[in-house]
Image 1 (cartoon, helix red, strand yellow):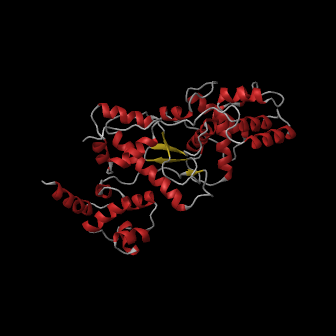
Image 2 (cartoon, rainbow, N blue to C red):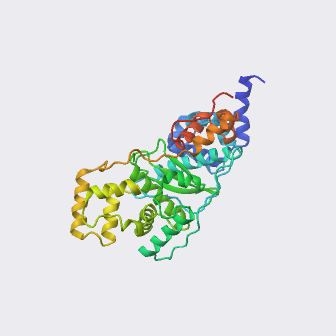
Image 3 (cartoon, rainbow, N blue to C red):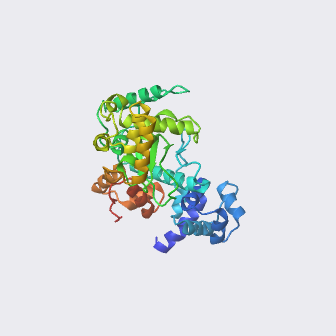
Length: 369
């Protein structure tokens, strides 16, 4: 069969097995409105809506134009990969400051990443999910959140010691952690379940280790405590922040290490040990009654004047590595970008975007087929 004939048959085969959800997924990932997509393809916006609602099916020629406009292969629309069954709701920290289109794009990237993870797991066994089960009272107190954080630490094998690397900890526990690519900077860290795995997404705009560690701990709180809760509540966000801070530095240990008086040299040493920002340490000291209201306000004003990076900068943000390592291992066993991308129903370029988002450095599979 000639290449020309293969290219001609691919749209026809894809049109016959067309999946409406895949069109919605690709359109949201590219952040293209129905009206604009229709204009590029040469159909009406109503026709695009009908395709996505499974009320009609695009012709092979129209499907080829849709694939071109959305920069996906035609097989993306007919890969036989259904939408993942998800548990709970996505927890966006920036729910009030982002548009629906921005959130849709971020969630679409998550589902595309889930496709890649599913394809990878057909060849490799990724870490088994082992997040602890934590029950929190409906009206949780600060003591309840502290106890929950301590229980989670012990379940994950931390004991009383600082967390060496938050991202690595979650990856070892079976959570897929990714850096968000090409999405609005207004989309902060968020978490969501795709299929049987939880995913945590981090913003690349926060290139600060202490802040990124807190983001990961905050999202871990949502995964453990708020899987059935409706997102957007400021109560849930405060609980997640309190849990995350306690998870990074339990009060029982931190109380003995915070200086009794405002001493930024000692606070910087404590920051380096626990990987918690100076602002978080001052806040915790005030909450524990170590610092008076006056001292707390003075310290926060000083930190606000200094801005970011804070004194005792810990360096660049923590980055994921699980998918990068998986890609390197697959390449050793002669699984190429092309073969894995075909399983995921996407192009090699799309797969590389996901792999890079889950890599400490730019890694990938051999491109050769």
